[in-house]
Image 1: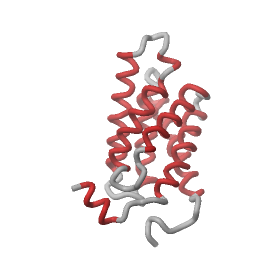
Image 2 (image 1 turned 30 degrees about the horizontal axis):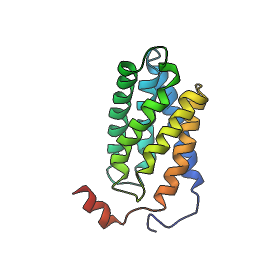
Image 3 (image 1 turned 90 degrees about the vertical axis):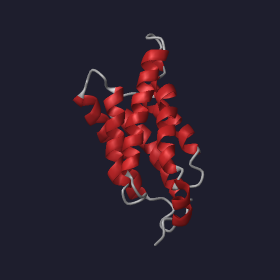
Image 4 (image 1 turned 90 degrees about the horizontal axis):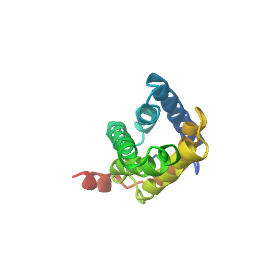
Amino acid sequence: MSRQDGPAFDSAFWFQWIMATTLGWLLGGYLLANLPILPGGIGAGVLQWPILYQRIPRAWRWMLASALAWLAGALLLLLAVPADLQPLLPGFVIGPIVGLGQWLVLRHEVHWAGWWIAISAVAWTTGLTLLPGALSTGALSGAITGAVLILLFRSAKPAKDAQEDIA
């Protein structure tokens, strides 16, 4: 079975993605409670890696890209956004940066990967700003990004094209 064959909507993948994102957000946030955004986001990226392991080669790049992007986004939020606006803008600032980092991995694997940056911004703005909460941040962000990831995997690049992009 190729990467493009299979059910129209992979509910098992979606559930696993939501759980990985939520659990990573919770564990990361509780490990360093004074900095909940940074370790929460890194935790989500780390726990998403095993879900992607069967779907993309060298999936460890997702973990690295996510961690570096969360760090860059959190630093930008801290240094460039006034303190009184920081609680209102984490998703707007961090979401697209994380999306850009993860796009660096996805662009080799799927067509239309550029949409990932915008979807990441929408997902993390929803989770971090519009409906924040210990469970809702990871769950909402995971539900949105997971559904879009399923759609993107439906337009996976053939293995030959993906290898040419990497070289």
